[in-house]
Length: 69
Image (cartoon, rainbow, N blue to C red):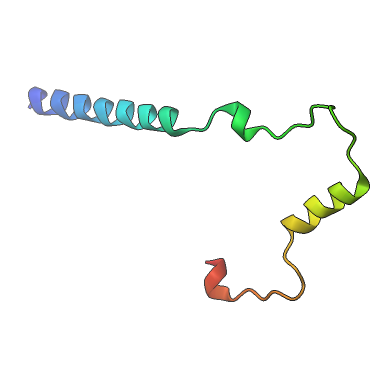
């Protein structure tokens, strides 16, 4: 009985280690995720407005409930 418990515990640890390794290897580096402003060029109000507009959906577009799910 103890061998079965130890085997299951070992397999659980193996699966957890494999999952953690998979996540660590497939996660994008922080440099690619971070979109901070570096100060090299001035940002205009139009650029900020365009970025905000791109985030939201146009009033002309419709979303059906199936698309949200």
